[in-house]
Length: 254
Image 1 (cartoon, rainbow, N blue to C red):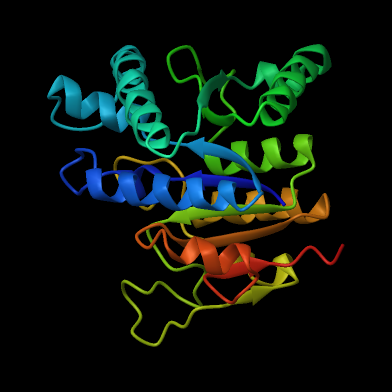
Image 2 (cartoon, rainbow, N blue to C red):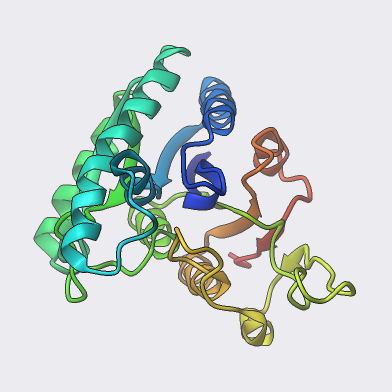
């Protein structure tokens, strides 16, 4: 299969905002093994701004655009250094692709992006994709990396998109507030569950459940299944790839 795996900031960092070294090591190990099994892997990773905030010793996510972009510039180096080191342990090469909305909006630029991505996959490289937060503005932003993962999947005709989040999946209510909230394991009618989407989940990340449902719509309309699962347990990616029940799977009905 051709897989697009997106990891959110909360799955890469501790509550302190610093990198969760053990989590990153485990994630890269499992993804390397999945690639060794013959699957093609596209990795969409958040975390640049959070890494930069930690590296620069800032008290929290910046509110002004210039500081946010500066933090992203610092953090992107830190993020790619970690991925390059970890994937190299398992003899895999990574490549970095940073894009803005214009790279998707304009057909010629989108074609260059897709051509490069496909060539990297042919060469056995793991593309690590993130929005270019150092230059992205309100007019140029893709929106969030849930949407970016869906856009990448649609344009590369992926077979499955997996969003690694800080919760198990979509619930009937807010599991942090409602003790009776239960996990929905499969969704084949997105319109019926849109009211369950909340807003931003963490102070360091930008994507909440609403953005994940938007991403699921994009994927399903293109005939691609999408899965939301907890990024705290990288080993469960094996079950996800094998089609076993884990998290919430949005069925495309292709």
